Image: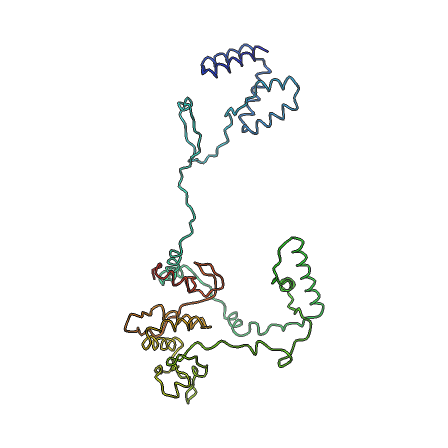
Length: 402
């Protein structure tokens, strides 16, 4: 063993014994007396490697050097390469200030335990989804007149020229070319594209539902609209049923205000001697023939909101205990969203405990549409302006201020 290796062994024993000052002095004397120019050059290269690379990368690099070196260099590397991280690598820092970097005093180096924990004290902003009442309150605030006026004051809409508006109102889709007749080749082409779509899904291993319509996808891809059945269509009155003609229509919503029986459409839409439509008296034909009491006639020029409001107020005045149940049943059966919105608006302000019914003329209907509920996320539901279905609208009525 060389003198330098013996000195390094002595330095290691002194460090293990905690005699750091004596180990530093022995190491300096050994390097000054026994180190050669080759040793100094190799130590400089090792210092450069550990300074420029992280310890795992530097160790992998030196392992590659060791494999391709001669036995003398291998022995030198085995004696001089550190088995642990010498902590010489410092990553390049940008010019920006890093709040998680802290300066540590030199006294901390002599502590028996050093906890190197990266701490970030900068406040973070998390995107939290607002609650349902908060979301509904925000939407109602955005619908207020002052908010709408503030938004409109920032916009500068551009009006369409009269030539464009006249064309859209009078000639749009009227002067278009008639649809072409589908030829047999078009049908064969669409079926071939549909077969390719099914084959592509099978090759990719995709699961295909039973109701997947490959022909409809092929029609969209090719731009052709052809029937899958090449047989001639059955004419009206033939040997099959025309469901568009013979379909059963929905029953009328309005029931008789005296006997509560379902009425025909003829009982609801009546015309006078002059041909003008009369307001609905709320009675069926049998109760009208026997002079049963009904809704008082409205003045000429009445609207649908006036007629629905009179019908609701008559039930609320004469049958206060059953009015809400009857009107709610009619609301759920109504196929018209406007009539349903008017009934919803009346039920929102109807109070069974009050002896007087507010004369609100006309009613302001609740804007209803089909969509996904904001609270229960059920699709294809009838929702209001706050995107709530009937069940969730009742649930969040008390939680959200009007």
